[in-house]
Length: 366
Image (cartoon, rainbow, N blue to C red; front, side, top):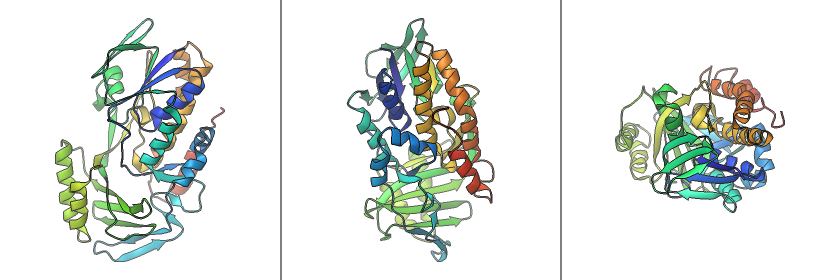
């Protein structure tokens, strides 16, 4: 039985683990966090990615935990409503769509529960070195003993450790898109009931949505900026100061960001690479082709990529080079199309048609 190490316990890694086990591989997933990571924004499962989760038996479970928005308001900096919609929201698109919007942590949990019975998970650990030889890749870990695997897959996000170890410094591949996004949770101090609120004030803005039966808020705050050389604590201070300056609910939002245990902030950026494999090592999802949250397609790319990569490996037993070539050949145009959603007329007149085309531009059985 061929052994595969997957770095990353988010969505892409466990989804790939599911399909590889179905094809008879022995799979280990290593995740830096001590367990499943809480928090994060609502994510969308669209187009062909819906076929992927249906084949995983997760379509109905995902529908049961989807968000249930009635609509949204757009407000001005003083908090006055200037626009509203009961047909669509900025986070999910049309409310009558077949697409599924759900919290990232809920999708992570669903995929993990589907795989934990026959996949080895190593939480609280990470890779420190890769050494490829003729019979596999020797992997050194920060905590666990070194082991050799037939293949190693990096599904460890925008700041991928596998990509750095196998392909070189992150700076070669990251393309900054001129903004930052922070996501954090808070008590529902706005008493929102299945209703989103969005604001834009100059170069900053936010979206707020209630979750968990309206007991909690999930706040997504963005601002325009070039690359910032700030550590995590400094980024949080930066965000709280920007929030505190808002005229509408600034002080309460700043306090929530300061106290949130799931606070997240990172640059809006894409990963662009000439190739996603090097020897026995390959990249999946954001690690190889992050489209940025601005595209709305990161989750769908991860799910589809996992299915395509596992299928390619199953169809070329013992020939990882051929499998990786098939994987890239099938995914390249799909990735380019989805990445373009974040860079070419986002929100413009052609945006809705572009999203519809991108989310259905690849067949799982191609």
